[in-house]
Length: 383
Ligand code: PEP
Ligand code: MN
Image (cartoon, rainbow, N blue to C red; front, side, top):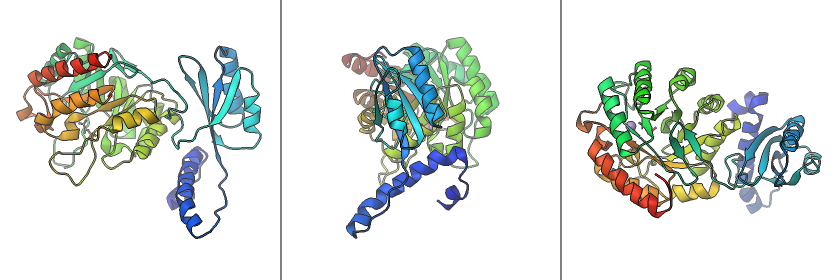
């Protein structure tokens, strides 16, 4: 807290306000219990301006300018039926009425969720995210498959061709690896990125790869089609802001001890920088259980669909940590409504340099894909 308050720079204002609002909210019941009145905070202005059906592009542009003239950030969101503009910043009394009387405006409503742009309140229809042939969300299930780490040219090319033949539309593979031990294989770095690009050239698969630090964003974004933020970095806010400024979709993995609200607020950091293409990935959390590497809570999928319009991907590989559990949990994820899967696949899992114990071989991946497709078809989705 002290650290945040000690440097109240302009661009940190909304972050500080969200924190204060949440502390304020938590204190209310405690204060009520001892009959103590906490004076209200100056409110954060977070409203949606719902444009009329058939509002013209000029009217929308005009309202964006009006929002910005109040010193608020405007996030236009185009739905199938109408456009809404999320307006976020510091509240002044005259704003709501002034905006409500704008041309083409149907109504102005508060956004109640602490995450604003990510909220289903702001956008009713589900978001679909695309990168080359990868389509995730709104009825399309996207499969990202490949090794935990890029290890060699032969390994990544063999993986790319095998996962493509089985129906994946995206190749995963870490070039920068977040390893628990500093002595473990740290990834092939830029060499790995070049091999991923070669695999894309040969197969057309979209490349998903992890970015571990802010400095790596320009380099990784120049090779990747989707930027992966690993579980360990879910709350690395400067990194989230940096990928929010990059012009590539982001796969945001849930931190192993993050609540759903923290997860959605992490996504909000990326959206708030103007990058609307965020996929949320449930990859399992830390619990007392030791029979699996992490505990994979599949209720996150319908829960997130209820709260946000962003697509939800599941990672049954890290979520279970055991190859024999991965196929069933992949099928279960699709049944729970997942918009995508990220799966570790290796030509020879026994010899993998990382996460071999949870990787599928090509045959196992192919069988998993057929089972997932059966469920997807039954649900009226494309895979
Ligand atoms: C990975 O995808 O290989 C990985 C490191 O995942 P996570 O960040 O979920 O642990
Ligand atoms: Mn891994």
